[in-house]
Length: 360
Image (cartoon, rainbow, N blue to C red):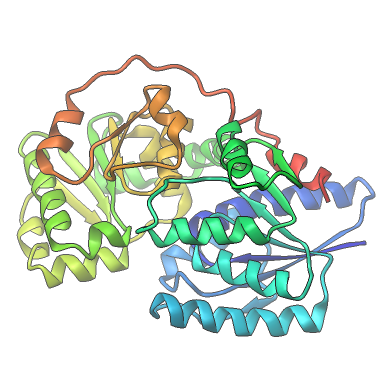
């Protein structure tokens, strides 16, 4: 039996974990022997950013539910490290599986590597080359202590080679493409978000903002809010509001004014299927999320990224994504820019989860 402990804590990780858990279940039905147990660190503590995701996607119920959210980076990561280490010592899995670039990812990878438990990093090799982003630090450190590095693109493989990481590196495709194929169909059948919000397909914009570099900077968030106001003069914009973004909009005295504009529609954080439905039907997506940049491509919706760089460079090269930064004038300019677009082959064929299991 191959015993795996999977560590998750944030929205994108729930989605990826769902795909691998389904693949494990399929393997076990075929006579193979995998045992997966799940640690949920509690990094995302909002119900719609955590528990609803588990319910919607049928993710394995956490064996261990930690409560490490709502702290500074150091306190959060340190608490996770202590709690995860104890679980790993008591259970001695064959592999620890981590996803992406969050504090949960880093804490899990550090705890496992110091106990000489092989770390499997899904979405290895991504680089934005901006170390001001905490996610970039998490990615780099996690990659350097991982034993099996599952890369979504050849660019990610090359990034690792440039850092002298060549052993255990594999291009497996993007596990989020697996999820897009499966949950895109489910969203069409189960989500009622368009009717609930009174939206028509391709007649609204969708925007998400959550990264600290945007929310914690008054200059940047004010500029993004100015762009929302200019957009709302002519079309509707839907903004699922991350808890941190809400805090800073209130702190900078922006929220009340924005809420008075009829074309700006704030919602609470949404479940995954509702979010997929909005992504599939938006005219354009604006985001600072790495994952949503890709989801936009998977659902063939043009994207504008509210950052100066992206780890998903192929979305830019293929014409599906534009880098706008944070200035309102640049965001508005991108809205009227039309690019030639082409398919991205590197994300695979929807069988990334199976390819990862083949490596264990």
